[in-house]
Image (cartoon, rainbow over all chains, first blue to last red; front, side):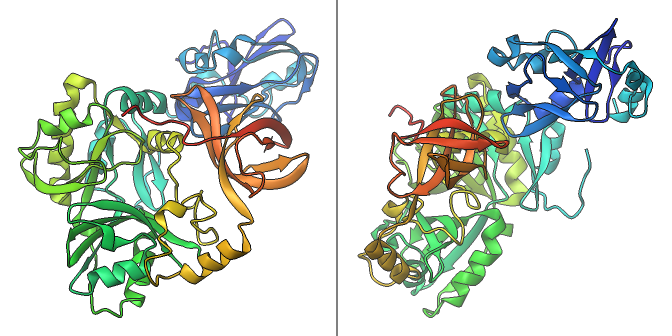
Length: 127
Length: 367
């Protein structure tokens, strides 16, 4: 269920790192708890995000949920396809429905406090 | 998923859990918010049929020779106009004109009225009615005697007809009949809270599971889905039906809530009448109006509404309208702005997002 090479947060986001770039999304557990996702609000390319700070929101039919960044850095890409098809977040939250890519400003955050491995996260959500 | 032991449960609680429902605390009741998903359940009701457990709703029975006088004193609509077997929407008001609750009044007989009231208002309503009972009527707080199951959607009639020998087709919208349904005694009312055709079935709690399972089985050929409170809310919002605590509460009058049609100011005295007459004479200050989002974003319950950059009102209910593919809502605005075509801004996380007031209901079924 949860890819081994991702890191996870208590706020139910994941980050996958290649080189200096981190790809960020919400977890399967998060989309399942939210239900049908109908709207995604993402930051602009070039803006900066900070670890554990909110950078956008995901809305289901019933509710709004803030998204917190697992890492700090500059936004270098956003997943434009989600604005027309937010339901992708229900279907493939760990893959096609990634949210943003950031250029990491502090790679040490990845091994810092509050970051979980796939096994730790699965245990955290009782999966 | 935590289970809160202090929550009240309907007779169908275990059935919901078996069906995999996501349960929430709804006004002190442990209720299903969704089973497979709100959008799918919403669509089932608009295009086929869905079944809802609404056993949390309260029932109050008023009996005796003074029953009509009491109902007509506490409720805004004119119960004298009801025929036996007929239902209407009505309001219980305080003297100051604000809502105690919105209710359905069923006339069972000249000396018996059956009121369906909101779950969390049941005891307050009962006490309010009893406090004004100067007609020696018998008032029963009867919620514990009833479970309620709503079968809603264009195929609801076909599904329900399979389960009763009563002829349902001649029962008109907002009429009811008592009979046998799925082998048990039932009050079968052609009413609902979805904007679709359908029936609300009042049965004994001990027989709720029998009725629920019979409805699901009879509806299988039509693609029936069990539906939760999530879909119930999106369906009622599209149909612009009020929800207590949102469009109406103790601070809001029926005139403000665009519900003047359920107030009969010519019927004689009722609680709140003087306040409404005064409000009408002085002119309303604010009124409920529908809106559609024009900019990106979803206006939701409680968000502020600005007009020309100035605070002007608030959203009472808002969210996606799955049938329409739009983001809609209801809001209170100063009365001169509460007309279709006003450009407004809904303040979403600190930012004003464009929206426009529109005519309502947002959705109306083809007759």
